[in-house]
Image 1 (spheres, rainbow, N blue to C red):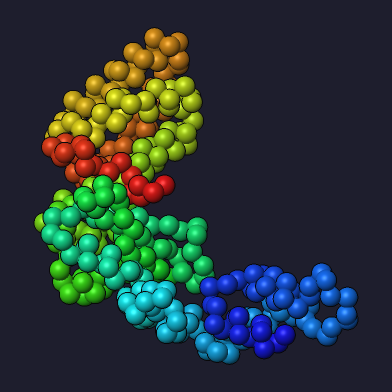
Image 2 (image 1 turned 60 degrees about the vertical axis):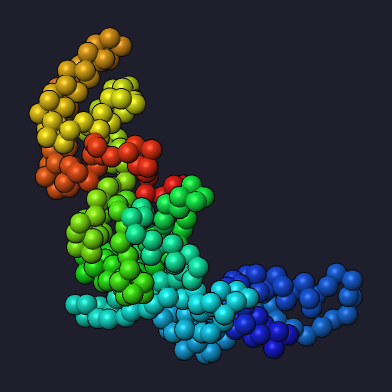
Length: 312
């Protein structure tokens, strides 16, 4: 039984310790066997799985992914593991690990493509902080295809710049997209702009509207007024008008329209709260982020992604 646990722990690294116990339990402790057998308890199996993997892989998360069985596409000789980069930044070890199917990597080499970059935070394991998902708008299938997954321990600008550089090296510098859609993360936005200075970059419009809604709620604007502001064709009108009109004609028109809509529906319009909201909007979405990052005026709206992750 100990040998079976060790074999499952090392040869089937993707199986959790609990799943290993379920498999061993089903094999050695069958319901039709009434004999008393010496074996291991659940806690002993779980501890043995972790201990076997730690001894075999050295207890280093960066060393675990170097195992041959984890580097290749299942049942193929094609590499799935693309790059690993570990360095110290301000005395803190920073790591970046990327996986991608070799055939899908070829899609990124097409010039004039549309790349989508999204980051997740809650679903990554320690010691990592973020998982970047690189997707591609594939014209042949009319789908956004997830191509590369990158785990990183940091979210600093230096980490994002290094990731963009490593991606270019992996593709031998043949990454020439026509536009990039990415999440509204300052470090990621700066890194994409540095790596692709001539590419049209568009932020995640879904996150743009989500952040605005959250700030309205933070200012205690009434839910009814928020619903009016977030309705189609109201506040999102700023994403399609000329960028030069956003901070003048656009915002003034929206203020008058919100006042009129609130009056029509007998909803109170709190001037002080809305003034604080527009101060936030100008500070964040006009000065901190470029208007061109969330304004899609002049673009083909059929190809504008409304979120950085179309699979959500």
